[in-house]
Image 1: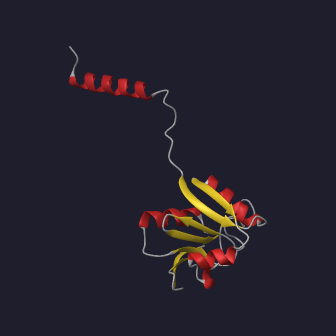
Image 2: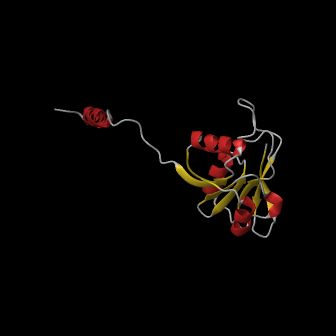
Image 3: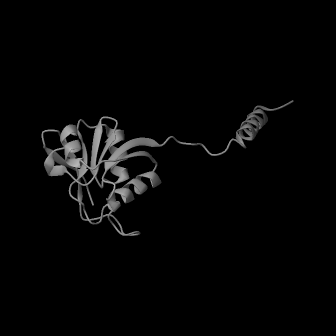
Length: 152
């Protein structure tokens, strides 16, 4: 006769054996659509950075970036070299992946996040192995108002 403890151990063993061979758990990648100039190397590096950090990137080379930003409503004060769309949010410039994930987790009532300009030590701009530093990520509204979201 099998004791209660023996039953639990046996059941757990059978469960684990059934899970063996199924391979690793595959997590879905977060889709993001990126608009950038075809000639911008730092934009391509930011795309590679997002790919390496669990995002599923769809990239569109767009030579009329100012027209696109105007159409999307990106305020001029927060603009950078590329623009991404993630659900209902806009991501402007070299925003770190951790901040994008935080945006999705917290779901603040903002138009998006921006790393205005092209901060030298931001993802896609910094040399390999150099830590992100010396810039801020701003949460922005369509009216141009901003608040600090993160500092590096």
